[in-house]
Amino acid sequence: MKQTLDPKLLQAFVLLVETGSVSETARRVGRTQPAVTLQIQRLEAAAGTKLFSTIGRRFVLTSEGELLLGYARSILQLQNEVHVRLAAPKLTGQVILGVPDLYAAALLPNILSSFIAAYPNVEVNLQSSLSSPLVARVMQNEIDLALVTGMRAFPKGQIVAEEPLVWVTSDMNSSFNFDPLPLAMLPVGNVFRDIALDALQAIGRKWKIQLISEGMAGLQAAVMSGTVVSVIAKSALVPGMRVLGKAESFPSLANVQLVLYQASAKSNPAADALADVIRSHLASSGAMTRNEKTQAGSGSF
Image (tube, rainbow, N blue to C red; front, side, top):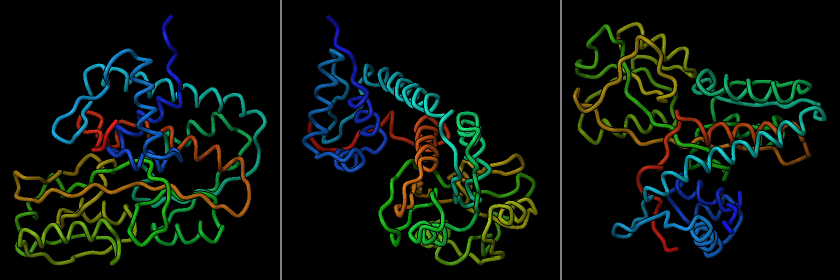
């Protein structure tokens, strides 16, 4: 008799592939590293095949692991949708969600579409600001949820995805050849800005700040003006922007983490439901970067 694939084992498997780390997977599922290792072993036994092979100290997906990964995500997505549909008629109330407009236009449409369709009696209050004040407001229980860019100074939250950063300019200009390089940047202290300037400094490229904007609309307007180069999340690309890379002598940029924070002062089932939809959407979103075809981290299982 064939063994069933336990959703908890599938969840550990998907998280391990996405995080590339046994320790981070253990943190997210609230278990020890040996327990996660055992879950992967149990899943391989149930599947009747090896899901990872070893290259040096890295674990990479086998072809069977690649196959299972797609099915695992679909199974977990369907499981979440079942819970959503069963709970939908009963849920009412309000949820306050904070998201920087750096991500709002790219990420929220599908998230809101799924959530509002499932929970038509819940009122969603969207608030847009930079990541730092949004995290502070969650910690003060002024808003229910915040989906923000992770920064070292922030308290620990739940990492729900990674997002690539890209250099952009207008596709109708050559300002990227100017010396010093004219930049449109977010304010001091923003991780996008820090990553970009550190990368330029590392290659000895001169630059000057031409424009500062707290929001994506300002950065997009500056880029479209044809006078500056900027750094944005890849998901925020729009027609008329040109991505700059090695061919134009621009350095690669580190990914940023998208982190979900939730207020803890009082129970809010509507906020719990929206958090679930956010996690589910980002887990299945092709716009988010994962290590699904590379390594699954080091460690042993």
